[in-house]
Amino acid sequence: MPKTVTMLLFVACLLVGVCAAQTDLVLGQSSGNVQFSNPAGTVDISFAGDVCGSNCLSGFGYYGTTVGNYEISLTGTPILGAPSQGVYPVNMNGSALAFDWSSGSSFLDGNITLDSVTDGTQTPRVLGSMYVTAANLGGYVAGSNVSLDFNVYLGSNPSLDYVAQNQGSSTEGYISAGEINQGSTPEPGTFVLFGSGIMGLGLVIKRKLRL
Image 1 (tube, one colour):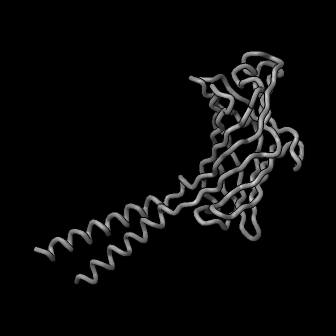
Image 2 (image 1 turned 180 degrees about the vertical axis):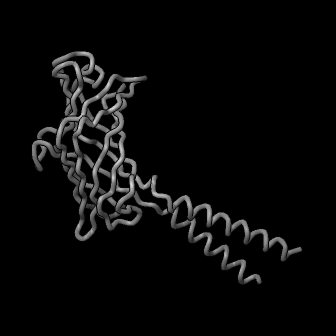
Image 3 (image 1 turned 90 degrees about the vertical axis):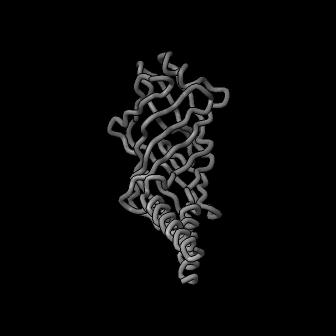
């Protein structure tokens, strides 16, 4: 019986360890800029000046110690709605954002939906989600939705609030950092509960054996 208890505890620790080892894809600085412009009273989002095209951003992406290249291609023009407590909702306005990252035979592809942009600093944060269309990275499953966020570094350029309040103005900056998270994938939480349950059961049996 003691060997059985030890084995249960060992398996539980392995399961919890797998959950703790989750690896997210981290986005590095983009070589092109995200542009916010207000040509007619509404703030538009576009991409500017990247090596992969006028409507494309690219840079290095990091999956643990694996370094690859990402590209984000924009078709159409998302627009920002009126802000509430510094948060601008994003209307995709029929536009599409295609994402791909690759490193050798490893890859992650998906379609991005932007949800909101938080202003108040020179590094507004963009939040959204990505529908994974294809992947062979651990934790990313084709057909699932994962969360996404990145910061736009505006530097000394006008703030997003300024652009929103002044028709004809614009600003731009590069993606300084970002992540494509695995948070919406159900397996990690399930493993934690299962592993914790086994650990609890093992401890109860061990206590009873000592009595």
